Length: 245
Image (cartoon, rainbow, N blue to C red; front, top):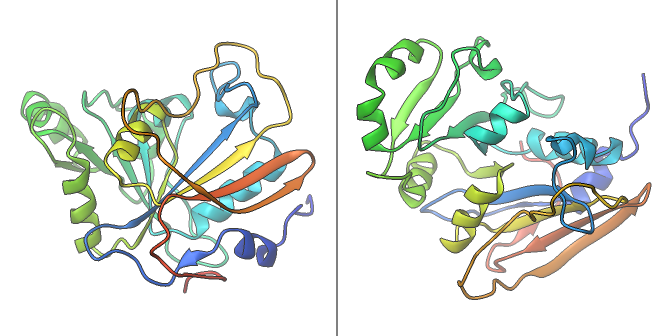
């Protein structure tokens, strides 16, 4: 078995969690990897940008959150499955899939587990896809927020009321851009890969004509030429080091 490159204590110091979270929504941390030239996928997947140390950070962040939010396209391309409990947390985080089109395959790997994901769509799509939702209901919980597109503030308020305190967002860029514009991201964890990526540099966010979003570099470290940066978008929440109980 390969020895980890980063121990838990170092990761806990680099990626602290809030001792307090907002009352109205979960505290939300986003995690992305990019090449210096803005490529976030090589050969169609993020694995070409990532590497062993980045995967360790990825797993640590997953092990220290209440829920994981991801767009359906990312879940499909990256072949998402249900998260597992970790050595530090007996309960696996809730997997939340967001889709405005409800383009969810019956063969999705996250539907083949004993535990069910939460699939979020909008009310118009839920009405149009009633038969498909009924077919998938034994394997997933489906909820609708918003009429024409997913109402993220409404969804986040619901998650907080259900006990979700810390939320990890994993992609993709279109959804991330919406969350940024709506002020729903508290922290960005960004891995800069030591390679120039081929393909089209798309970046991981596009806020169009919105005002620039200022960030503070809260911590950073380097290993195997991967640069790990943690940016705070808000400064009102005190952080504590360590792993949540």
